[in-house]
Amino acid sequence: MIVLKITRIIFFKMKTQIYTDGACTGNPGPGGWAAVVISQDKKVELFGGEQLTTNNRMELTAAIKALEYCISKKEKDINICTDSVYVKEGITKWIKNWEKNNWRTSDKKEVKNIDLWKQLQTLEQSNPVSWQWVKGHSGNPMNELADKLAKEATPI
Image (tube, rainbow, N blue to C red; front, top):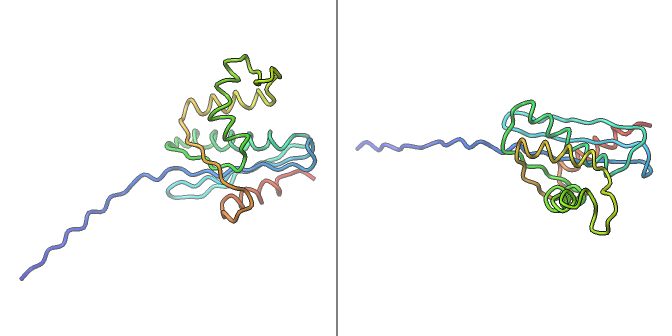
């Protein structure tokens, strides 16, 4: 008797997973940003810093730099994990009303970091992204790595 077993191997395109974080010593003060980009065959660490900035600007910069990198590498199907509620809610919910209200908040104040929000919005429109909030400092290895890199990138 001959038994023939056929196994079908199906390869799925894995989402490009990005973990971002920002850090700041003083607010404003020197700050750093970092992104860990994980695609099918590699993990890339991106990071940088500025002498005078805010934590929110560094959080936004991390997402922007990660998307710029992914677009340059023609990555698709991107998921960004951030521990910043400001970034996640800002880009997925608040930005629609800000834009509709001429970049004003619900209490009629000018939205902070408009330059970065507009840049992030443009990048996201050219390459759709899913956004996920992850709790910071909760043991997620890639979030912890992004946090470490952002702190190390902060100028002294």
